Image: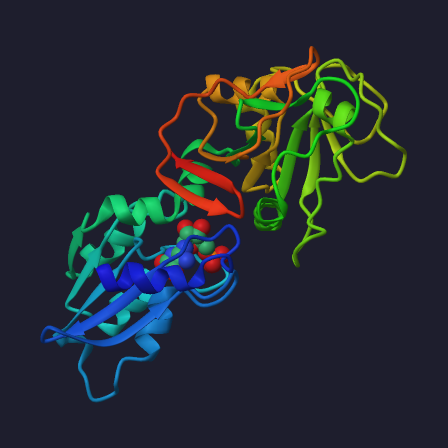
Length: 327
Ligand code: AOF
Ligand code: ZN
């Protein structure tokens, strides 16, 4: 199963809103075939592995290890559970059930009803962690949220009025642009939108720029005509880019994004907005960039969000330090 998890990771960044899945087939203690889900819309891991099973081997003499319950539905491909059943595998070991309601236990049932010995739960935590986004999407029906901010050595995030102040260096900026390219949407509060006029694009790296969402309960921001963005608000307005939410909460916003098929969103400030999402328990991941330089404190300066977390990963980005946390 360890090997199946390892090869599953090869699909990282390519499977869209589908999970990363790996599959290994074992005969007399040796791996005889393996496969993984390469890309969104492509064959599932089991199909890839079964295709590679040497012809002289009898499937009935082998065991299949797969990091996610074989699917039971006709999606872009026929059900993997039926493929494994029809090929007559003797035993199937599954790391975790699939939280997708189209599958959720139905795959295992198809196998068991055919008399195949099924074992579930081997390296389950690792398999679920591998697909955090997919898990949040499927179990909570909301977009996965990554909170990102940069702060100076003395804990300032920027100024309240006027132009944004640069805090991090060029390596950190490229990192942020990569993060943007990996997420289909980016969200900021109206204050940040008005103060910084952020471009929120990926101009420093290759890759698509995320869709922009502004959180503006009272609809007081200025949104140039023709600018491609969306606004979460409480006020009814004639602007077709506005989404009026009856319940104006972090969870409601993430649920709305998910309804619009947005699987993950990068929240880039400001301080209050970041804190609101944190307090609501809606932050799944943090990327905090700390610069080695202090900012001179002025009366307009904004402190970094007061969010207490213990990073699970730290790395240098030029002169800056990146601290990451994952739930
Ligand atoms: C598997 N093996 O390798 C993957 C599975 O649209 P489709 O047909 O690609 O189906 C996507 C759903 O299938 C996805 O939401 C998840 O529940 C499951 N993914 N299942 O047996 C795989 N990638
Ligand atoms: Zn499948």
